[in-house]
Image (cartoon, rainbow, N blue to C red; front, top):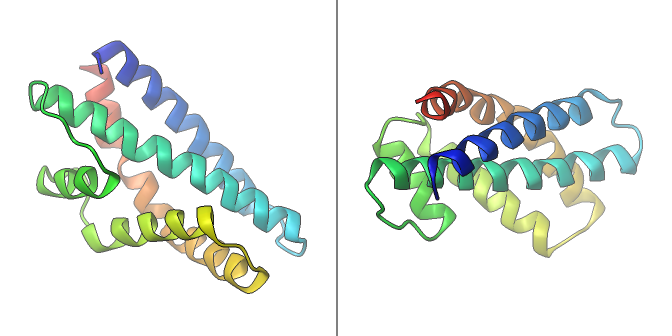
Amino acid sequence: MNAKNAKLRFENLERALARLQEALAAPSDTPFVVDASIQRFEFAFELCWKTMRGFLELEMSGASLGTAREVLKAAYAAHWVDDEGGWIDLLNMRNTTSHVYNEAMARDIYKRIGKAMPLLLAVLPVLRVKAQA
């Protein structure tokens, strides 16, 4: 990935996280809001790890990181994120929401997304600096 594409991906990430926050702020008394929040989480998480991958690969002079787990571990090693276990939990939630659906699980993940939102937001300043470089 080149620097221009990484910057565009970062801008998309900022918008996706804002939309996720918007969904989480809506009253959760309908399944639609829960489902929309989970879908927005999936988009935001995918953009987040792929944005990190792009900037990490640029900094590592073309090294290739394949999986989300590899990227999260590299971001932790680079001190871009502080809570490796929390990010792995986000990855597990993302994988769960993609493959299984039931109402109880959806409500549980919805609550966990709200609690984990600070992790997603905390990486933005780091990535913003990378995007401006």
